[in-house]
Length: 245
Image 1 (tube, rainbow, N blue to C red):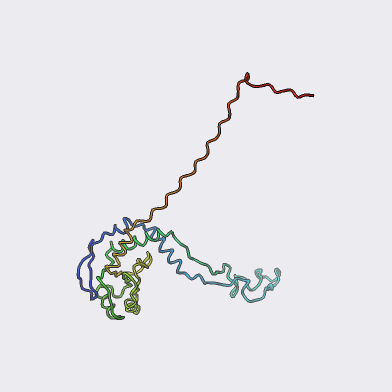
Image 2 (cartoon, rainbow, N blue to C red):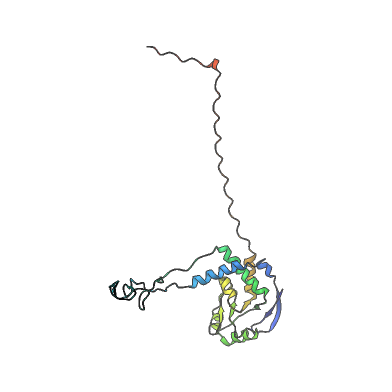
């Protein structure tokens, strides 16, 4: 498919041909789901905490005697069934993070970008070069591409301080170099703006074949078991010598 290429003013200056199958022959939705859940889980702080009945201030004395009052039997006022008491299933600080295999995450990143390209949700810009931070320039570019009012990811080939400073004050706009992209950062925004250099770098990394694993060493041969010696015939056997008294 052909993607239109724009300049920094938002005018079409050419086209770029790319086949999403080059990045990922197929899109595995389950793999994308697992990768997104992993990245979101790793963002959780896990600092929530509530008090148990052993941590709430208050007396442990029984409120009233067990029988004879006509009321339901009750223990201490710190019970979780009473207002101001402790939580029955109290929350504790914990780590929600977990990791997927590296190659699975790389495949998920390629699948995510291939899916966005196939849905025509990626805009290509020839070069984004700014001599100094200019928020107005970035705002005009995003507006010219028809992405104003949406969440947008701007992906240059490498980190550019002027580009980052120009986009940080725009609501919903984030900047990440192509080397920092992952499945979550690609799937979250409503639109993606990439430079030609960035998509070329992405295609190059996707085309690289994984390094071949080292060949396993051949297993050592086990020594052959020795065959038992054949018995001599009875005629050749010598009679044992009698011991002297």
